[in-house]
Image 1 (tube, rainbow, N blue to C red):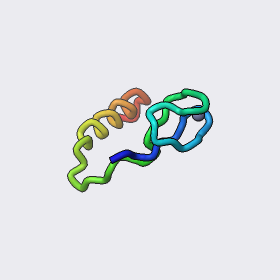
Image 2 (image 1 turned 180 degrees about the vertical axis):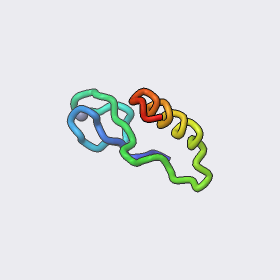
Image 3 (image 1 turned 60 degrees about the vertical axis):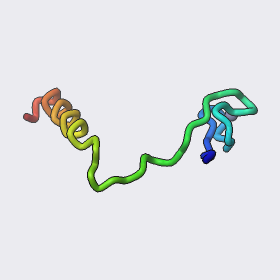
Image 4 (image 1 turned 120 degrees about the vertical axis):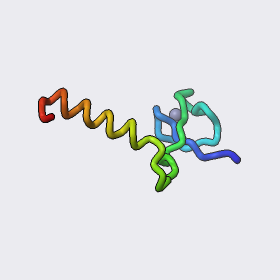
Length: 58
Ligand SMILES: [Zn+2]
């Protein structure tokens, strides 16, 4: 199934990978599908911990 994409240059909507007007890359503007299992939670927590350690809060 084709998904609607939005141009990163001129914000026009298109079904193609690249914008027809300015040939910038067009991306799917929707966020990733929500999952209660949260497959990337471990990475998110690790990144947060690194941020806090960099600030000296841990
Ligand atoms: Zn464009």
